[in-house]
Length: 573
Image (cartoon, rainbow, N blue to C red):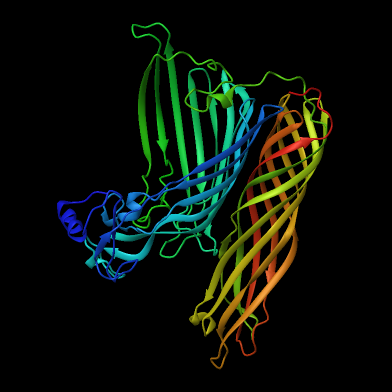
């Protein structure tokens, strides 16, 4: 925290005595917490945090490693959290410490599974943390100038007033990152990668912990050789709607990054082994408006826009890494994850398989919304609102493959829990409907299943590229309220709820490859069209106009998944 000489004088005037352990402050009536007079009193705080951690790591077949961690970590409040009493220019906040803060205790259970070798590498973790007396800083709805006297709810000050407190809280979440070396390409390795992370944080009464980052889902492609590394990655951050009092939501965004790097090594030089790295890094290439949900001033400050950096890095005493060969990643990334496993014997795609998938679906319920004159049965007004149906889905699939040389044909069924919801509205102006009418429309697609055929070709013995087509089906619910007035001027609202079972068509394509033993991994794109359906509520008596809607639901999805082939493979890793 940066203080000017004037502020130091103001603080010194409030301190009656100084103790090695600190001084507590009280605050005026327009700030929190009480008492109401800006007086101070001597305070001494003693803390003895203790921590205990227990972990188990188990090596499994096929280069898998499972882990379990149990820990109890205590943290003493920092001096800033205890005794802050003024503006912080680095964050543009007016911080108010709490001298009554005690030890914060975090009880955590975490499980992990990772694979650090082979064509597929991944690292997955799930955690649950119960905080006893979690310490946090939260906006209290005031803004301030440079002194306490300026703090008020309607102040024009530049500083957001922040008070420190502590409450019991629960954090739960997970992280997944993976890379898949798909195929050799032009003297190097071409691959795809992905990541997902989520955290949900609430106090024990169910209210939200302030300033928590949103769920994120991303992926990309890379190519690497002994000397070159190129990577293009797109990360989508979802809208953060789980915000606390005096906090605000943040919109979702797409962050596109590009990295191109070249490395050259000299084992003999006047300076010994030398490594020269040059390259280009492009960040936020879509120039998206990005707001950081953990910042206090996120509504006023955007994160940096499109940036491009050129870099040159010289490293002396850099011996060539043992993994500097085709099939190994640059040392800059995660070296241990990129050591390839020994080549395995032939692989057969034939037989029955089953597995699970996760992915992001985006789509829309595009509606023709029409208002009709009930006497003449003639249209009065219409438009085409659209309701977005974006969500993360989890599902299962099973199927059977037949092989004919390099050709593979099969049939597959899947089920995905979607929980996709969207909202739109339509209004008939008074000039068209004599009295203004409005329709509030909600759509819900709880689940979707499909039965599809697959035809593909084994581009390598263990990598299958395929196309797929078939019939999707699911239950779509349309609900809402039509509001307006009768011919006599009486206000009325007509609710409606229509649930319909829909069939449609779907097409897509994907890439699937053997991971290890009888396990395969895939990435798949699928477009589904569930057709159109009507919703025409029965209007209240006396209404001069009726409402009729015809919605068409289309969904696009990108999913990653794993399968287990039940017929024996020819050889295990």
